Amino acid sequence: MSALHGDDLHFATVVDLGRALRAKKITAVELTRLFLNRLAAGGPRYNALAELTPELAARQAQRADLMLRRGHAASPLVGIPYGAKDLLATKGIPTRWGAPPFREQVFDYDAAVITRLGAAGAVLIGKLAMVELAGGGGYHYASASLHGPGLNPWNVHHWSGGSSSGSASAVAAGLAPFALGSETWGSIMTPVSYCGITGLRPTSGRVSRAGAMELAWSMDKIGPLAHSAEDCGWVLQSIAGHDPNDAATTRHKFVFQRRVRRHGFRLGVLPLDYGTAPGGAETEEVFEEALRVLRGAGMNVAAAGWPDYPYTDIARKVLGGEVAAVHESLSEANGWMSWSTRAKRRPERLPDADGRGLRPCGRAAH
Image (cartoon, rainbow, N blue to C red):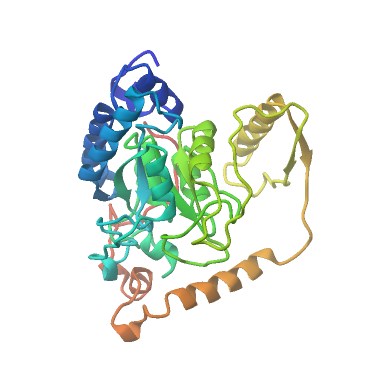
């Protein structure tokens, strides 16, 4: 890094920030204070912030500086601030799941991924807003969130995507170097696509979901959102691994490799119908450029296909059944109705930022 101030710092990758910390160009306490202030000021602008965690962050940053001084910074995440989607339990800190019935919910334990990032030396600066119950109540409207519709930093008249809306907005706006999100059916990939950042949706069983709000147990996954694929790889290495509290986790260890073994990695590419894809020719150009980069990295890229099965219909049935079982207690009979349901019945009660309805996404605007 050539500079340690302004946007060069706010939008720096985890790798670059780690180099600056090890070179003693900045301390973890200073870096944490900078991002805490930025998240506190910018988070509400994008409806991205659920809860700031300054006391915890201060303790973790001081510990990180001690590790750096003693040369014990084995992980590239030591001293790096981050935010966590508000469906991940944090001991003594509200975890609201984006839903009104859980405004006061506080757990006495941390989610497994929060514990693992703490052990890696990362610094939790805040809980990040999300779509209500990660979409468990449905979200036909961007307003279906306790903290308001997630706003896209590129254009605040557009949605940041769901359900990891706050995680994507925070990283894209330079409010946190990386964040944790979750995906059941597109909730990492959608917001990172809308916000122009990088996301990694791990294979099922790679990352423990212990301590995370359950939506659909056979489909839920937790993964990183960041400024680069390399950043996501280092975060995944820290959070992946077997956990006895999540029986679905694999015992295979994940070790991030920065470079691909030449001619040793086969990548199957599913066909993309550019005629129906958003962006058309522009999407085709970007997609083909991505394939050129992957080939240049040594990957053997080949066309792939899949059997002709009704995957979407099957997934909807699994998702619907598991969501209904998980959230059975939250029903109108108990005096609560999802914001999405209320919006369909009384849409005038849920105005968005400009009263007209947020668009799904838009072109870069800054």
